[in-house]
Image (tube, rainbow, N blue to C red):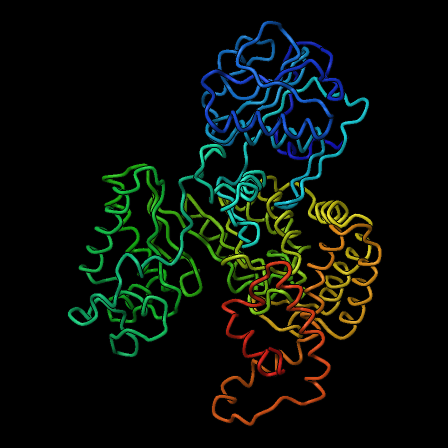
Length: 612
């Protein structure tokens, strides 16, 4: 039996005032699962999850009941009078909506927590820590046999998740349109996507994103009120192709009035929402008019005029919605905190690590990219009540290229939590059913670290690879090690966009990768494992076409004006077989894009190598 891994942050106490026998999980035949007659939907679903997965582990289906007629042999799930009348009683009033408590002893088990997700997450925690269940992918839950003897307890453990907003965003594991995917989303305890009451709903907290384009659509006002638009080089005009057409002028009083009105209307329509976005568009066209520039010069950052504006909105929100936060992005040009202006108490800052290395730990002193971010994080922590992290976990230029970013995840999550971050958004290839190299592995590691940053990242990698790939696991693990060792040896310090060369991927990695994936495929002992190996092998075929891909992307504009431009025939000839295999794998396994906004790039690449 494993240690109580997810409880690494909790206090463990003797709850019963003496020594009592534990419970043998292998001998629950004759037990039942007890829920309150008025249990909420997520508590009833938690009982069903326990029943279903314990049945798979033991072969025994425990009945779910709403009344008791004996003092013992019960698994109490969720709060209520029945739990309070038991010999493992505790109250959940006052617990946070995801806080949980597990009590085992005196012939009973009690799992309950705050509403709305505490009891459900308590069941998932129990199943992981005491039955060794592992929620690996949408279609793969590892449930080992409970065995002939497995005694646990007595114990009394509580847990309060350090991050109240957790979103690990991969398209292929975020498809919440099927019940299996929605259940998996709940099991990985990412608490933003699903509003369904069975899963405890979501946090009612929105991700702070690029919001000005919706709060004040500049194209609507451009003709009659060009003064609403940011001034760049002495001119106020929309910029074609820029997100939102640019940025608004943040010292214009009418702009402030329009945004306040839009924010208040949004909150009236969504009264349960606990925060609201007032954040820059996704471009660097911030206002340089004399008024905005004067604030920014004084504060040493364009965040000066932005935070002044956000604070003004926050004051209006506080007057009408005192429990709602106003969130803004500290992103690219606005990442640095201002010298003198401080966020209002109801302002949330979503700090983005866009420029940072994804191959070196965020606090690695050898990274030239990460030091400034760490300083900004520290400075924001001194003036802001609520900091949340937006971090980047894929190579967005080439989703399917091998990416050596798995080893840094444990350190990064711990750094963010230790620095006071209260939520995290990990941006992967999320638009539609995409795929990225080892995305299911990455999702597993990050989801578990987001729930408990004290887990060991390397152990999580080993666990997933061993359980998901079975006998084929050893060569796949060696490939993962190869990619990471190679990057570390070369001192790769790369952000979230790059070619194979940028990430240190060379012919040695390519040739070794082919051998290792071939070995894995030969070791796979059934079609399910062979399919998993095949899917993840897409990364090595993507690496195999890199030379032709780079040529094709670098000649796209040139080709439009010189239609006779042709790729070297030898390069084309050696690329086509790998490309065919890559796109066959992608089609078979539902991988829609190889790069961000990449459908047009893929079509051009196929055209360049003569592949239909």
